Length: 349
Ligand code: ASP
Image (cartoon, rainbow, N blue to C red; front, side, top):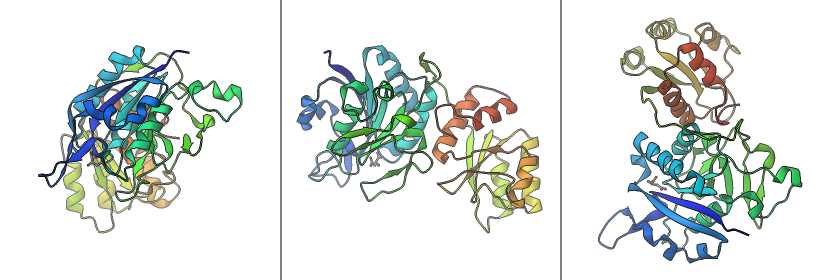
């Protein structure tokens, strides 16, 4: 049997960092050495090639340009590999997973992002297991153990995932929730796609099923997006200031509970006038679990009348990038709203 071919893409982050004796902080190490550092990779039944982005970074510095660079790497190598593993810093991995899920649609193979809380060189590192299991998950499904009926197992992973602490998640559903513990990510509104214990158990039922098998690669995101978090006591001046920014086209409002916002007259007037000026307002809840249901309470009824876009159960990370993606398509408000409220890559229910 032919060995599956996996491309390992290095972007930086703790997973690939070392502490040099004379430096107080962690710095990216020479990625060329990765196979030397994790000798176990050679035991996997696959052919692994490695590539690095131009300037490996701490993921706090990730930008739209880095995402486009990643899309180009995957596009160039798409037909030559069975799956892709991206090593990434944990801080913004959920944003990158969301970005790739919009920029590469109709995937026919897995893209698995992973990182670690401790550097590869640390004795107690979580990096090794993450790296090895991610490579295993990036192989075609028939390559690893199955626990489901044959009809289900004919499915394969065709989406952008994030693997961390024994769990595989849909990437655009994740949020980083812990900076201290190994359990760094959660997917509050979508089930885990796989669990790694003694065996790798895939949740075939919930894997993404693309509509078509012709991948589409996009290379644009429009950054005219801003986020406003509501809190009791926020000043009228502050709200006015945020709405008066002429650059942003989309304002995502982080609301309370099931999408509620205060209904003070001055606030509703601000919403109305910014909508009249052409801004697209999106309602995303501060509650990580559950969904926006506008109109359920009096405090959100007005929002329905104003045609505010519902973020339903999307994560803030995904809402930001989805807005950038849809803005780049230069569609009118009606289409933007319709497309935002529907799933593009399984990011919204
Ligand atoms: N600051 C690091 C990064 O996101 C943290 C990590 O990788 O865990 O690149």
